Image (cartoon, rainbow, N blue to C red; front, side, top):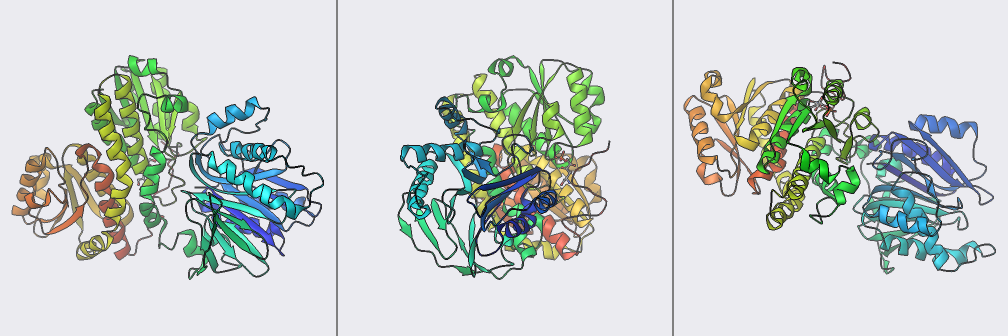
Length: 624
Ligand code: M6R
């Protein structure tokens, strides 16, 4: 999420930066800006709320004089609404030090409070601005008198100030910093957020991904976590956060720029499926510990008293977000808080019977879905309080809701929702666990078990993704099928629904998701010879029953493709197996949905469908 560009060399920085931002716009596009050091060592800063085209126009009207070093940013808001003030680059109190940042600084409130006490004035609501004031503060403590110093003498001081500032940060960041007093160097750093350095003729580049500079050079160095780069026009030096010098050999990129935007993947959907370990990490980041702490309370402002008072939870959402809501219902009920779920479009009548005892959880990736917004309004009119789970800062839903929990998954471009679904489910676990701790429904030791296992989920998703080739092969065997059934029980029943929705929307094939136990009450009549039935049969208190339902389907000719884990496999007799890593049953949807997303993707690929923009659909449905 968010796109960073940086350039130092013999070309006009404005052109290089804006061209790069246009290529990075898929990473975020709610606001953008550039900061360039002009020929007189003054700062040229231009920012807009909106797209890079608007920034391009602004810069063209009032061009920078000279200017061969600068940084740029296109934003996907995480802290602070999309606006010009919150747009990057951000500056220190004296408009001398300037930063662009991608990621989330977990301890920014703490740092901001300390810096405010020492007189720093903040101009935005972002976590990013904290970093630039911190660099300014570190420069002060290094006692430099920059007024008459030569720029090259200031370089080690600037480096040290940035290095020390970084040491105080908790969270994830890719950042680039410039200092007007030191115009021959850009500093770049990476911790859990990608950053690449492009090595060109006559100048060097910085970018969140190589698509921003491939037009100029195909030679790149990818910074590792914990590394800093001092980027100058003739050369680049690399360091650890401890200041130790490092060596890096450049790699040659074979992609063209469109491939690079998709990270080398054929479609955004596939890229987003592969980004899911990171999206889960981003949704969890800084929110689980300390258990009884006020981490979440501070962030979402939901008073503990409200959490204790409410009698039940009502979830409203549409499509994939509704499936996340169904998972959420099981999760809340597991922690002894009654919960129900409705399609937002079917909520009207139920809205009349709720009141302030109900906490509404409205789930929406875009935060702009008309059905969800309408349902929220109706719920509020009945006196209920509303918390939004959304991926989109500044969306209408965030303004309608009383409280907001962001999923922080970054922009989802593929119309078929994948990583946002993982983020929505993860947010449900975070909230339900938080509520359970506050309401005293769970012992701390038990809560720790869930926390520890949740923290392992990103690695389990990675292991599941590593089995992609097996899924491709199985999908190839069934690409000609006209009907698919997806079955499971309990908390994986919504995953069966989601598997069916994915294949319907991107491969245009008829599919049904069913509660496995319901099959015998009607739908089993659909099964005849060779019909593919995807059964989620990972370790569960319901496993024997699911095994029985699989036998019933097979007896009618179904070809069963079973999603199993290493322990459940021996209990399931199927035609094909997709083995996923085992986790706690309650968390298993986070892993089990991955093969179904890939399966739908490969079926759609075989059918040559327009995967990122399926027919008749829109990413955000703003009509009722
Ligand atoms: O932006 P939202 O999460 O509110 O969108 C809700 C649905 O329209 C959305 O999940 C839709 O079902 C997806 N295309 C499914 O992949």
